[in-house]
Amino acid sequence: MTKPELRKAVRVRIAALSPEAKAEKSAALCRAIADTPEWSAARTVGFFSPMGSEPNIDLLWAVLGERAVCYPRVQGEDLVFIRVPSREALLESARWNLLEPPHRDEHVVGFGEIELLLVPGIAFTRDGHRMGRGKGYYDRLLADRAFVSPAFGICFAEQLVPHLPMEDHDRPVNRVFAA
Image (cartoon, rainbow, N blue to C red):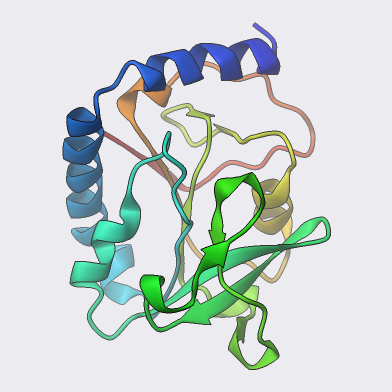
């Protein structure tokens, strides 16, 4: 199956989930993430702004504690992470119906400062291979030498596949959380 065919097939499976099922699965994912040693050790966590087809990781704000949170902002061909004090306070609507923080130089977080990165995707394998939406933003980030921290792939169980067509530029995540 080609990447476009696989993306379409997985989107159909996600669309079949009820809003209640997505909410239950999102809550289970957030509990599982919050129970990891990586979450406990991280002082700065890279979130993503979930699209309607992605798990709602915003529930992690309730167990944030003293951790700093940063969100990605698309700048050209790359992602830049911006520290935000709260999801509601500073995120604004951007392309692809995503919420992004406004760019402020004093709030930019270097890749080396992110101690845990939560990564979305269209499909994942259990061993960490990931297929994104096709622009390569997270692949470039995961390949960057400055980024050395754990990266967790976050998905619904319906997004798990046994195999993904991989290309040279594709980068895996360290662990996959699916519910």
